[in-house]
Every structure is written in structure tokens, then in C-alpha cells.
Image (tube, rainbow, N blue to C red; front, side, top):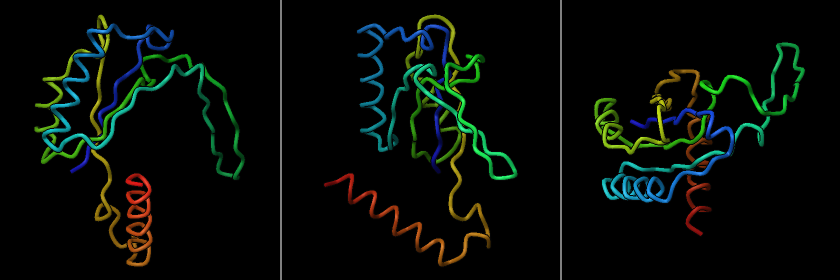
Amino acid sequence: MRVMVIVKATKDSEAGLMPSEKLISDMDAFNQELAKAGVLLIGEGLHPSSRGARMKFSADGKRTVVDGPFAETKELIAGFWLWQVKSMEEAMEWLRRCPCPFDGESEVEIRCVYEPEDFGEAFTPELREREAKRRQELEDRARS
């Protein structure tokens, strides 16, 4: 199963404060362990929400852009990993080994990623085929 591991933002991350060399080194070592174990699929840190935007979709088809920064720091994302694990318990075990993402308190959330079978019959064979083709094209592009 795939899980998204979401590092919640803090006031410091939203202020754009960079992590220490030690924290970067500790995270690099942790990411190496994840990669060596075949768990890490991708991981990235995100700039503060002041450099981002949101788009709201209304039922009538209207789109509205809202520029950052966004007020609720505890609901913002500062970074993420995508992991391939056998279970949520395995993901939690890996997360217990993770360096604290920031100085002081911080929070990390784990969410399961939908797989094709989760969509049932709505994900028709034709849609599955197109999705598989698109994923293969993306993998090929990443390798070139």
C-alpha cells in the first residue's frame, strides 16, 4: 500500500526559516534508510504558503484564486513523502524512527493513497488502461 506522510507546517516553516545543517543531515540519513528499504517513492519540502495559492471550485463551475499566505498554520503542509509499505503499522514504525521535522513541537500525518481497486466499477477497464499508460509514460519520462 502507498501512504502519504504529511509534515505539518509550523510558524517557523511558514516564516521561511531554514532547518539546521544537523537536521538536514539527519533527514538525509533517514531518507537513505527509506530508499535502501524500498519504502521511499518520493519526498519533498514545500515553500511557505506565502509563495502559494489556492483555487476554489464552486458547484456552478466558477473558479476563484486565493493567494497565500494562509492563516491556519496547523492545517498547512510543509513537506511530504510518498511511501510504499505493507501496512499502516509499518508506516508508523518508520515514522517513529524519523527525526523531528522541526525544532520544538511538530506534527506529521499519514494518509492512505487510493488504489485503482478502491474506485470499484466506476474505474472502468478503459479508464484503468489509460491510467496505466499515463503512469508508464511518466515513469519513462522520469528515467530519461
